Image 1 (tube, rainbow, N blue to C red):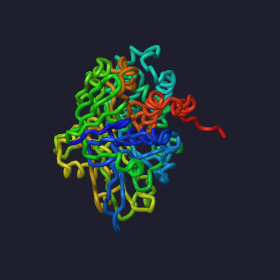
Image 2: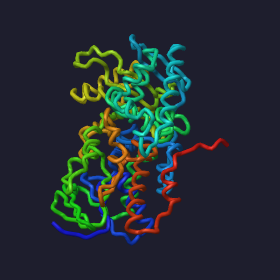
Image 3: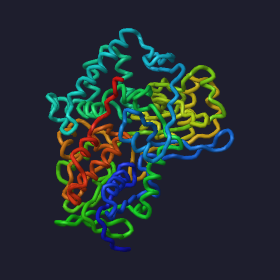
Image 4: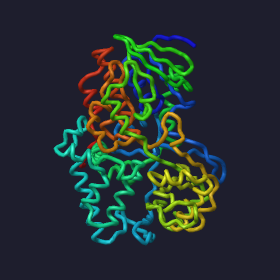
Length: 491
């Protein structure tokens, strides 16, 4: 046990917390900073792991996975850290399995194979949502002219009232399940609009085409982002040291950890998911508005499974490796009403080691989490075989990550807001509590829920702190640059 005095304590050694520390030291290298992490690793919701290949091993991502040129904060950081990207494979035919008959269809364009009326309805619905999202003020979403109405409404209710066709509505629900890890009936319509707004549109969220969220992977895995930042910070990063309590006096904050260590500082940054903040003992206690918000912002449900192969046989057959499904029918007696699979992508590495990455999300994750991993994997492979044939069963290695079991996260990929939450969102999510500042991807105004949002939130918390303890080190230009969304040049 020890007592140490520092300038700033950052709780959480994920991308947000480490980005915050990096920004602080970039502006003033004399600052004394400590980063406390409860896990035995850095990276937060990124996790890169080795899997066997045909002739050795390689690294794949079981957590946050993709980046794109539409995400300025993460792309800039990736470049600064000297990391390289790898273009997501989207060439070839894709598969879609929805509708009453759960029939499997393939298509080669960016547009799914749907009847004409369903396509028109899908296009109309997406344009309506994009139009509404453009009206949202990220700093105060509830101020939208229909804010109270949309906050009391689930996204599912809106889709029920807007979509004319069953298959277009089903595809929208799958898109929500894929990107957020929740069902459309679990989230506030206003929250969804806010989420879409922060990304600049639905297309940017859901596609893997140029200038969208799934455009690139990181060679060697996304956890390198945190590992490289932590490496530069050296002994300032303390692993396996969970924070248990934080108490504020007028000019100081005292932070205690589970090991009995005490840190006395001027400022604290909580760079952890909102669902974890309420577990801390705070003095004074959480403000009512924050407490009410966190009650309504649970973490979503995400299970990710990667299969490696000797060869990318799907490419040989002219398939991209991409599939989208509502799960398909399931009659194998596992007690589940549909199969587990939500979507897949080709996850072949930059040096050509073949893999497929699969996702079990939302209600399907909750249902299939109750089965054994063996039963779950068998069901996924059975669904995949409908798309790519029986060779999917000839995998070299397999690794699963259920983020619900991850300590200090307890779910993934993001905390989502239920109806009634957005009333408290503006003050609850980002507003400092005295000398305690808030970071984490959920608090971002640009690409909330993604690694890019984590970077932006870390920089914003650092700017808040510097403005107070090192005035003059940040300018309005710094603030404006951090809040600026991506705009693609017309040239």
